[in-house]
Amino acid sequence: MKIAIIGTGNLGSSIAKGLIGNKSFTSLYLSDKNTSAVVQFTDEEYVTITNYNKEAVMNSDLIIFALQPRHIESVLKEVASLITKKHLVMSVAAGYSLEKIESIIGEDKHIIRVMPNTAISIGKSMTCLSANSVGEEKIELAKTIFNQLGTTMVIPEEQLQAATVICASGIAFWMRLVRATTQGAIQLGFEAEEAHQLALQTCYGAASLLKESGKHPEAEIDRVTTPSGCTIAGLNEMEHQGLSSALIQGINASFEKINQIKNG
Ligand SMILES: NC(=O)C1=CN([C@@H]2O[C@H](COP(=O)(O)OP(=O)(O)OC[C@H]3O[C@@H](n4cnc5c(N)ncnc54)[C@H](OP(=O)(O)O)[C@@H]3O)[C@@H](O)[C@H]2O)C=CC1
Ligand SMILES: O=C(O)[C@@H]1CCC=N1
Image 1 (spheres, protein in one colour):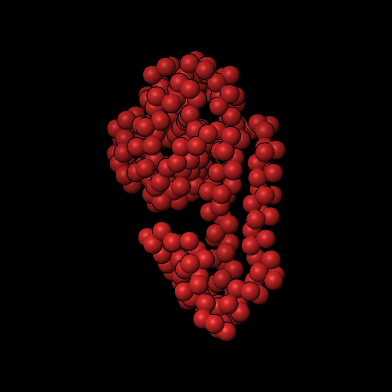
Image 2: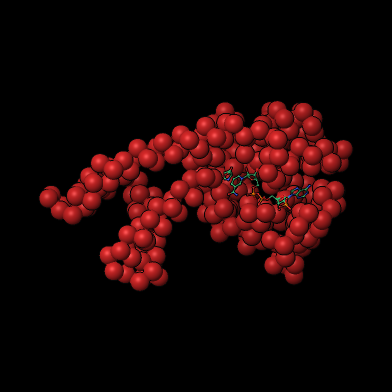
């Protein structure tokens, strides 16, 4: 498959890294005003780095627009005349609807909104997908591509904002929890690097345990909380301080914000 990524910033370069790691393309165009985030891929086979969005579109079948909401409209207009019914167009822009994309490139085009997270660079993204009606024909192809870079879920477009908060912003929320645990461990006497390793492997173990056992988190928590022990003392204090409530309120604030993000 001939793929182009237009916009190679934080997410575009992460998608590029994941695709290159998988060698899942016949050619890959990486196009940006400033290509510094992908200069490391200059010598990769079948990869072309360019400043010309039109060149990338003309040489590709699948075009992934990885631009900020305030930039995507002008870039879509720039390349609209080159996009045909043969192309599959994907957008990762948060809050930028299928309807808006259709209004620029035409509703007869295959369009899929894709919401990955930065773990796509290492093939561990949770990626949500929503297609326009024509794009439904290509949803299996999209799943095949992104299943190689993690796990996918096809959802209605109305849920894509919520999925962005839980999965795309969510990776930052989890990282903050790892960081806070590290800070706690340092206070208990570990060196910073040791503290980081302890927090990270424990977080990885918790996620892996839930994934592999299929159990509810509380069932696993019950196996850890010795009666009158230190775990329940810590958990209850965290809840007295509002841990679950803070997380849920943060998720709600993030959701309110994403619903305000417009293309401007
Ligand atoms: N970062 C993340 O984890 C996630 C981001 N998203 C969404 O992905 C999109 C991209 O986010 P992110 O990668 O963080 O943003 P970045 O700003 O890091 O990347 C966007 C890139 O597009 C470039 N660009 C701007 N205008 C043009 C143009 N006319 N032609 C070519 N390239 C251009 C920017 O260049 P310059 O900097 O010079 O303007 C920049 O390098 C956003 O819509 C965001 O909502 C979705 C999920 C996760
Ligand atoms: O913070 C943002 O707005 C973007 C969308 C999700 C992740 N980054």
